[in-house]
Image 1 (cartoon, rainbow, N blue to C red):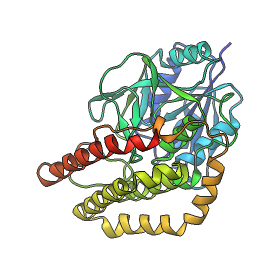
Image 2: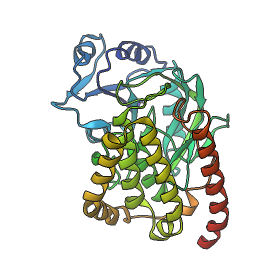
Image 3: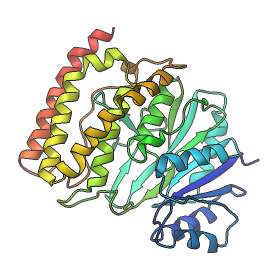
Image 4: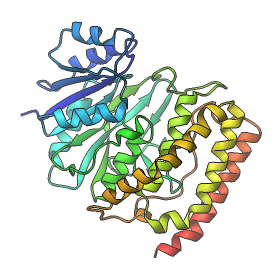
Length: 347
């Protein structure tokens, strides 16, 4: 029996949706439920979905409420044990759903609650094999091939979630809207003792993303992307990290923040992205602290067992040749040596 619901979260997805639906229809696993949640697209996405000859359930929101809200709707409406969340700019390998579903069934009595495919990023011509959580609170993508097993962090591109294992207090933070919301979700899940398994035999192809929110290459940088990344990173740290972690690594957080500030100045988005992001974070500190209290429920794993130092990585075009590249290398070295010294405090 197939216990699988596939959810596509769409927003102005007309360019991608047809081929994604075709790949789902061509999947080797049959009798899956399909749920499409649209964030008030303006390019005809709902009509494309409705007209596609495939049985489906659709939720069309009146306004763009973000990835987090859509993901939570999917979790609440799902009536199967397993849920696959799909970015709209993906295409599935024929066996991806079957491989993830079979692996989840095999591990149903273990602590593995999320199963992640190998991501072949067509936009950047790269392959991603899971990832890690850098101690500064940044997700680091693993580009080196590894075998099946536990991984420290993944994005929301195409995870399979075992909903029977997901605690009721762990949902996507709807305040985060988009960006860092997946890192926040999976990190809180791991602090509760649940694990993520990387399944390389399952393959998904990822493309360019939504205009105005994504960055692939070039000198310009989306101010909307920068705004959500900068503000949500701070919310994530304050909400999830233990007090000892925040205290010990505070100098590194300041150093990383300085780099982000200079980056926004260089890209000409300081006033449009950086200052509003910081202002929003400061304004919402009280509600973030209330969320922090909730995050402490059922916490089983210490931060130091979930984080580490890893070489910083950035999308193409983010770090320019010259001064920016040297600045990142300097930052990387400082963070590496600081972590080596500071981690002894946690023993």
